[in-house]
Image (tube, rainbow, N blue to C red; front, side, top):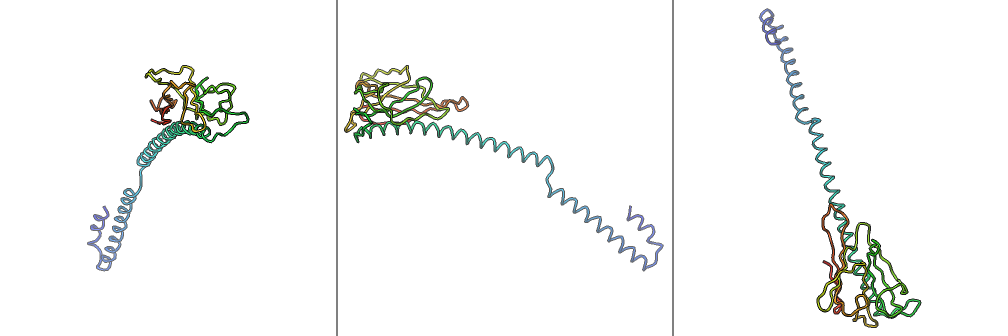
Length: 226
């Protein structure tokens, strides 16, 4: 439109006027082209609302995934730590029998008591005061450990000399070490019980069957965590 108007009046002007009009026309045209270029650059360099929403949504999904993964690892680490702590308590009881330490009353040895009685999963070191090679109400307690919330002892199984396996219905087992060398041990006060397997489980249906099994071998004194 500007060009047609310019051409219409251009023929009626003098050379000087023509030159002046030409300069004005090309300046206006240059300004128009610059405005178009700037608008295009703004559109290309900027972000639309939809693009920003997409980025925010992706970041939110990744954050939720990372948080869930972090909490899962935390619970698995708690399960591993609980199993290792039960092993530590058992070894401490063995070391006490080897060092012949005494409680305030004369002790016949030390052992580890592991229990899920009453739905409370725990373990502690006991001092055998009546020489029955297992824990009872008259014995001394040295150090208690309660399993973390959400981690439970779900099974205690004993294997006898002839290979018979039976589960402890009361959810309790004692492992006793005879001083001063602690090389001889008893499971629930009996030398006929050859090994005990203790299963720990995470109480979380979202994680599935996440378990740790601790196995103590009476003759060798070996302890395994699987």
